[in-house]
Length: 176
Length: 90
Image (cartoon, rainbow over all chains, first blue to last red; front, side, top):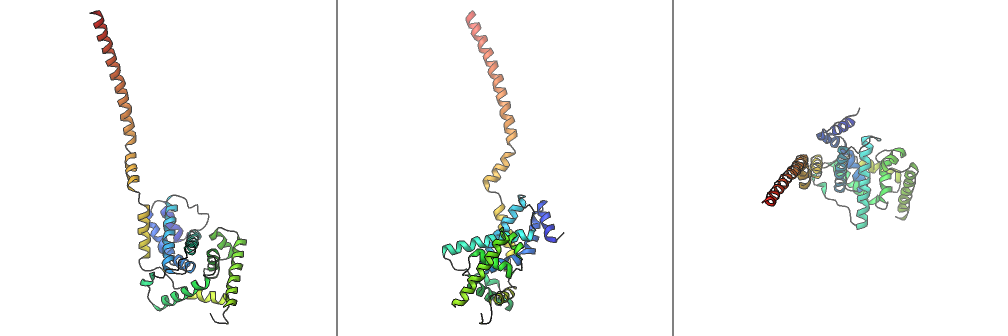
């Protein structure tokens, strides 16, 4: 059994401090995923923190049925949270918040920040669900079946979102 | 984006360039603090939880009080009846 699943077992058995192991094992990829969908690190950290609180509550309340792996389950909570946050930002007409980078340093991270900003501007034209689907496929390396599990939709719906997202990006490129 | 770079190439490049993203310092500790803060019971919940343990004792005390009151009431009735009877005789 994987260390992550063992940590889940320990939390389910009442060892609540084991949740720290889950956070340590997953926070890097979840914040990266959140940042690629949200377009900046500050919003991503907010979304992922909220996702962990939800996950902890669900685990301690016995609501995690383990029909999917812990990784897929956490991805689902983060993706749903990011889509909701992105929609609510769009409704309020707010721009992305580019603040947290105070703790960042190093050339690789600076380059990543620049790339994230470029990604955000480029994908801004896409609806949040299409953006998340495209990120999961092209950047997180998930196949359509896995994306369907994470997003709670059919594989057909995943395919449709990907086609629409690429069509929008192609159209945007032709216009520019 | 260069003229030659198509959508797939640009996605692949941005994927590579954002691989270094990671949580800011202290993120894990902030998460654990948020969990602690948001899952701690409120004052009312704590009070109710503590008070719940006393409910069976309080219920038993109330039942005993009712039994005692009925017994005392019966004794008073008997004594009143006796005193009315003696007054009647007088």
